[in-house]
Length: 94
Image (cartoon, rainbow, N blue to C red; front, side):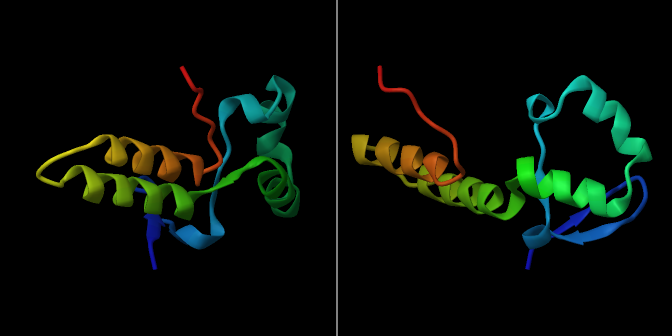
């Protein structure tokens, strides 16, 4: 299990129950309303617009392990791209 710990408050969370909500996922008004929303309203909003933290952490760990290899090849680049795509991001072909 991976834990997320808020170093200001000491709050401990399990990563599998957490999401990342990027700035652009909410309107300015929604960001301002967060302080007045109930816990269930915030949870609903996070479920709708957030990305799970755990796959992102797992992808970064896998990329770090792959890039620790002695010799890189074009196969490594494609493997990293697949790990990034697994987080829900897109990679443009150039």
